[in-house]
Image (cartoon, rainbow, N blue to C red):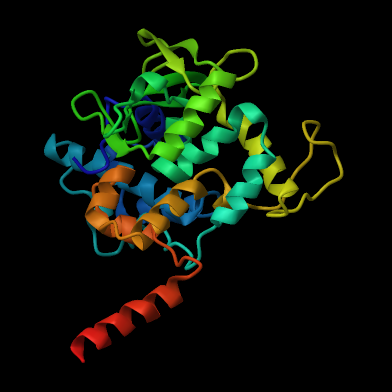
Length: 334
């Protein structure tokens, strides 16, 4: 059913439950089903748009429509008022296209890496060298690596995320018990050398967290990256360090004079956060000849078109490369 949450992903279900409780039951809960008319839905949309962005209203509208469709199927109401011609359907916006240029260049990430604490510098290499998401880097274990001499690979099989305010292990984004969305990425020898050096200085630490949800089964994993207190990384803490490193490398500016760690704030920089490393990985892969279908697999995307739309950018010498390629084509034709 459209709009139905994935019950195998408790975090997704919690988000769904919260939207339904706050934005459907809250304003409409006192009405009987037969009292919800097309005009009621129109008024509800107008009022939701006063407090929510259009994308969120589109998601909540989808939930409401699904609930009312179920009521129709159960013969509780004759028709779904969300499907009438007088109701202007609010659709969740498609994710915006990526900018033409990579948010952070290789040179910028080299500089940024130097300004991170030593124990987190190799996390930059995992993002730009393996295409890992932030949570996947936090959940990365040396036991996930096949260190074979000629065919090194990384099994990207878990992330660290939040469920009801608690850090948990979970499958990669979109994964569930029957479809974990795990994937494998080739490991370059140079990157393998960097990871070995990191592990010599900062040996992997066993961390125990619940699986999938706050009260889930406890799982112990040796983690590549942890805090000084030998605990799992929290994105809120790490993002603060990341922004400080961005400022130190002149990629962003601060908007107040408070010390780092004591209230310092920075200008909007969402496109330059850790996810920018995946964008750099994707653009470099395309430049080096990786086809988009393979790249989508490496990034964990089901739709190669999404990969092209969101993750592939122009790289520094792209114009010169195109000129050389066209020149070769004409020389062959001659």
